[in-house]
Length: 58
Image 1: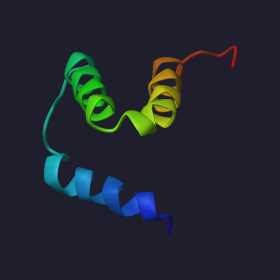
Image 2: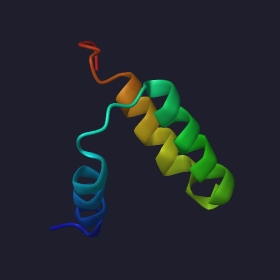
Image 3: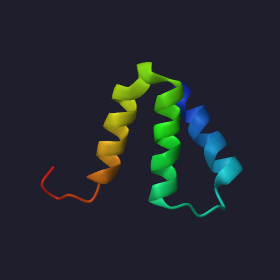
């Protein structure tokens, strides 16, 4: 188990029944980067990966 798995599991347990918009997610990611600018690169990679998840060309 990776360390991040615990955070993902907590997210699922605490908010698993909620519905959110991508706009809400984008706002939370931006807020996170504002608070933790040293983590901008991995957040950017995650956001790009999510944005392109359905692209067949990748």
